[in-house]
Length: 449
Image (tube, rainbow, N blue to C red):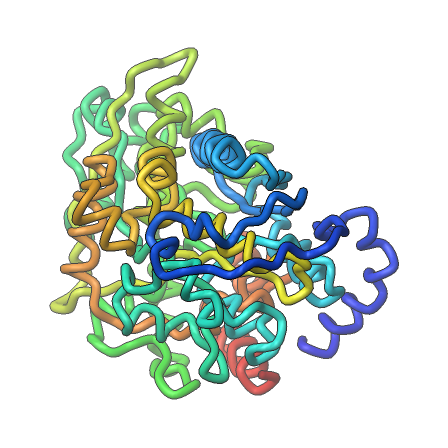
């Protein structure tokens, strides 16, 4: 898979000039900084020279709006620095950014997934070592153990934005309309499928895409068996145990708990939060990151056909005697090694994470902040997101291996997860074959890196 990806990158580099997030040229600003500038953006780091930065991120509409507002505030404070934004939905985003990083055309400031440090940092070469800009970014606001998770070859490749985990969320409006209890265990989950089917064939209590199913599979197995999915680069589950999980996912489809992947694809939506069936309450549950739930909540609250629907945090569904699931660094801000203005890029990161105005504007659009200033001094956080974050970090204790999110596994449509769960849902493979293919794909991914 690695060889194929590198070949694809090489062939695509010629076209990346049109798609790239290349930082604009210009002479790099260079002035001294002082410790006094650390907590409030390193004012002395900026000169009066005109500088242009590119800033790239993915997300939903709420994150886009907040980030654009924060960028405007940053540019008002530093009128010599122009920030050009490039953003979009998640679908296809990682592939595009991988090409930009490999081609040396990445945006100056990049919102990255935690696993990108392992996958794309080139062991500390493709992103700027932000330890070198600790006079600009106040790194004392972050716990050292969290910063250490963002290092490669001993270098700080990114500053963590938030910690996150996956929880069940339910559209209480729909559940109340149908007269169904919120699921808390296997029996009540299956009962919900029956109740929703009786109400309408296109109503489902839970919707799971391909990558969601991979996470659900791990949650289910960890709940039953009480062991981490991967340790020391090796899957800790047998083919038979994984087959059991595959059978359970098929059981959820057969019992009308989740729609088939063909049904989801037929909805013609780029992402679930933009799916009309989610917006109008026909899909009434998700297993989602606490850092991403705002867009789902906003979508149903602002529905044209059914406004004001209520989204609630569910209990962790009990499939066994253990607390399944994991937490991780949700995402981070990195500075591309090709940036001509790394100091100004570091200033933007500090503004977003550690300065009063940036903190207040950004809110929890990227999850509950790791910055102590955001939490302790500003008390930042949407109440639902704060409640969810507290709940998942207290419940889910299993570690997440960074390769779990590697593009070879989770890319749409060619990643292992998409292929395996797609064929299983379509009935083109057995659960035993799906388990074997998943294990083989993971082993191949791990052996290539």
